[in-house]
Length: 264
Length: 52
Image (cartoon, rainbow over all chains, first blue to last red; front, side, top):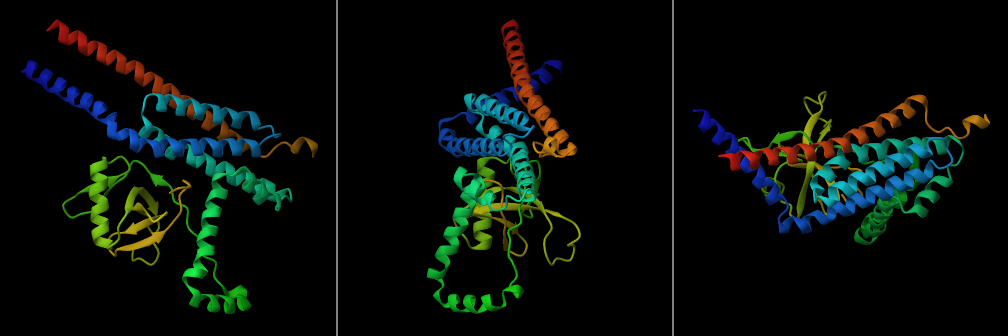
């Protein structure tokens, strides 16, 4: 009996051992590149953040955050654990960047440096300014594509006060949750395997009638105009044609959102 | 006023920054600790196999 149990335990141990081997297989090398690039982009964003706090009494502590993050980056990249690195950034760095950028923004506005904010951001080529450039490109391309819309848009400027302002809600990817998306209890989450994610992408592609999508993760959001709108829901997030969307699977609807990742 | 010039964060935000730094330290230590544990597990595992 005891021997059997030991075999069972060692058997299981063997499986976990295999998994690490599979994880460092050749195919993963190519897949890991975007993660490393993303990590570098975040480090650059942290560097920019540091420069915004330069001269303040917090400068040294922010530098410490950058240094520590760099250490973690180096440690995980050296060991080819890039997925863990991405997970770390999603759980820590992104939230930190978001919070301390907003704080710096507010501080600069209060000190009457309103004009200086976009100038500084554009010069440093931060994540935010990348995002802005991307949106600007979209805006510039729009009139060419929809000539007939142009006239209407001009008329609307006359009553500018009544034009509603659209904005993309910022969501945070939840890395722990799993969502059941089919009746036969198939789950999807940030930590799902590549095969599971592919299966989900194929399912969504068929349901929504769209192609070239990538599963990003799940996010906790309030959906508009629903019977149970009072409670927040965990919903899947996909990346499609250069922008992230939250999916409402039952109604096959997409909601444009933004995440902190620039190329997301 | 001049003393406040270099202060961007409120006291609470400052504490948050400290907390975040601690968290990063714990994370890195956790990584290094996990590596030690794994080395230990693998060593014990090999010992067991060789003893059989």
